[in-house]
Image (cartoon, rainbow, N blue to C red; front, side):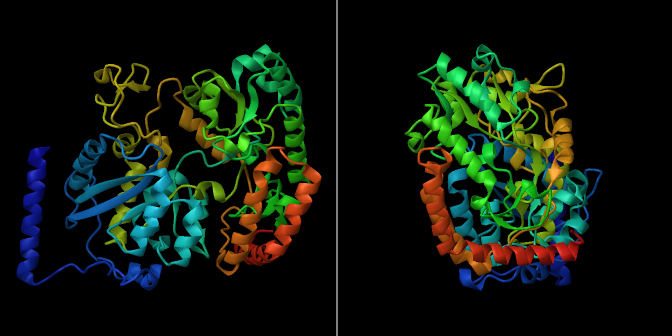
Length: 529
């Protein structure tokens, strides 16, 4: 490999010498703005990119591209892995030979990611590919900080389209242009999801198949509370309410305030989520559970995730979305066998694929080269396994049956690379399967995605620019009431009426009206009724 790298470097030097002799130079792709307010539009940034050849070779020979360094940023729950540079070096052995790209991996702690991206984009720091979270999508769009990928993906990212599917690709559009590419992972949600300790459930005389509706939980909770009065029957994740996917039965249409009922399966009428019977019924359930002693009065002060509380023996259940493989995934974190109950069915809507997307910033040196690399990341199992699991023999070993497990070389020590986030990097479906999961896990996930009910508004993204003030005001009202209402700590009737009144004053109807207008236009343009 060292000899190949030396050959590649010599070839690159010769190519540069020829260009210098001919007086030819490659254009800089884009100029950094003088300030964050001068960021160019996505189309302007794209038009000023390099025009060099981007044809990669399939036989392992250098592509003919001039050498380029690409900075690739993404969030990780556990921050920067100790062996990050080892992974980077292995990836560069592939990309330098095939694309003439040197990849600089930039993992950032999930908690700091949004702020750091805002700073990098505002100052036009070197950045070529980055993960877009749904809660930042509109803000990046409004600030013209993303490149339009509509043409780029068809010219340089066909492998991505083949891997993910055009329908899920379209979820990254805003105002008709593509700005984000979802990662290939679970792209549907098993709503009404509740993770419960298997031993407590069986002790109470229940099986997973016995729980089909939210009403079925009442008897299970009562029996578990009787058997384990000192254990919290149902808890939340880190100070949130227990609503989440346990009670939510809407297509949130980006913000979750102005929504479509029944996951958007019936019609395109936008309504106030909190004024629906569905929301009120859930809050009444939570109130009943709280009064029965199943929910702690201190739930708002919880600082741990649900799995940690179950692992410590302090809780029986917590809300979480269902997907194939969820039971094994949560059991590992809980330190005891758990099962995931679902009471609302499987559905998908635009917000789900938008939760993690890859994009190209407006200031990328060459959007074409960025897309070419992303295509490789989504289609090359070597790169995807390096990003997801690390280096074979160092971080993991392959078992006889085709699973992977912790590397024997670790000798029981903690791995220096364990991002636990294969779903962030692009195409999880071409990575190895960890022991304990079924070998056909990703086949089942794809079937889960394809089989889930899909909102009529799938592919629609709300442009909130004209109602940002109202959204902030409504969010402030909701934040004041949500934990109390959704965890049953307060009287449902009087508190819900008060919240609705304050939301009306904050302008929720304006949000509903604007969203309905945009949705109607989108539906007409896309032949949706």
